[in-house]
Image (cartoon, rainbow, N blue to C red; front, side):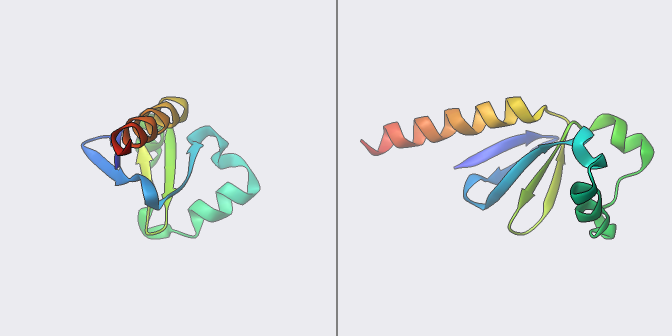
Length: 86
């Protein structure tokens, strides 16, 4: 199953480690984590556009969609996927 995170990006749900609010980047742990991926750094203009960052086993994705909406989509997709298995 995949999760659409906006900007024509989809992420495999099984690879998602966490979905975080981008405003929380100012916490020390998040700040260090995002700074450690300098190749994926955002400009100030881009920072205004994104509401969430999605950490996967392979990559960090930025999303304009709120983390709450992403979590609801993931929960709904998981429910649908389980319903199809029955």
